[in-house]
Length: 457
Image (cartoon, rainbow, N blue to C red; front, side, top):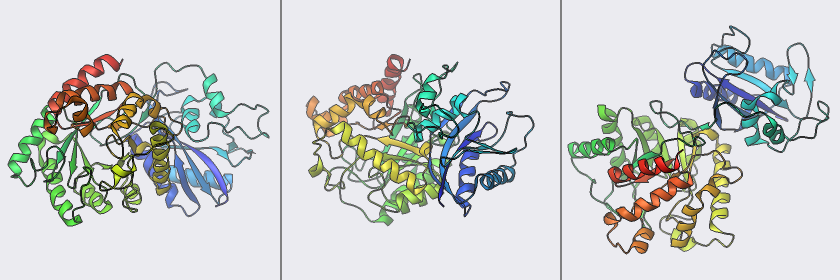
């Protein structure tokens, strides 16, 4: 596949994200096309024909063995197989696939013009394209301008309403919109189904199903929209339990939550670094993956998540829970190093086939970090969010009851570190966190509401 091309993706009918994901899967299933990378997905107002629903748009980079006109034929075949019916030009459509660029070539006939003749006037094209190739220019044979695509984007008039990337987490919850300043912080409730977690190990381990159901109901009533289930402790020095034991702890809880009417709109997250646990949990009804190793501890994790099509949170960590505390050395600065190492994991996820819009990041507070590292990451979360290559991705931050909070506040008992956790949660929200992972759902839910009122404006 010696040719490289960039394809615009768009939909404003039905499940728009699902339509775009299906189109990418159809391209990948072709022997002549392979999707290399995707941009984020951006929701925008319709252009040209204004009386229609909002669009979701993105761009993907592909390699192909097809000529431009053969590629057009293949894309149109995919559109037709997906049931696209063109009623009016630039009107509503369930899927739209347009060739933007093809190598460094120009091409024109009665059916196709490359580069796309309208791409430079379309904010919804340039914004996702600039996530992939901001410094690239049009082929010299098609334009005398030396402007980069990013320069063209900055010259466009501002949109009437702000745009944001979308990160879907479950079909029944709105996607995370990490660029919307007025977004609501999501509350992820920690449910440790283990006997040895650092702050609450054993509290809900092996308890009656009816008791667990009441605890889950209370967390949801207190404002949790994501339940994070863990069957393997990741506290410093924690030893791995057998896979069968982890599954025996997690799967009954997934099935219980899915059987409860009170949790029908709740996202289930699986806190694991094992791909086999992910596959079983997702098939049982879980929605997203929370991997403390970002796919490092199990080489099958990223390909498995790509195959399942679910969203994954990639957390920064070094080593394993048993060895991480020996690896807290950041001579180039903790913020830049964490950002750079997370960017490597994002690239690994993309190479495995995970779409960019299915990625959440976590700076890994307390994992291979000293107290000063943790504090600097909280102070400079906004710098992490803006790091080149990570811009637009949502962030999860977990500070709840952690040891550095206890050291600073002088509170030895982990479950009593509520006040220190509250301050850390506020700092995370000020820095732009989209999800906070907490033990004390009711208290931190109130903290998040207050912090949102102050900072999410």
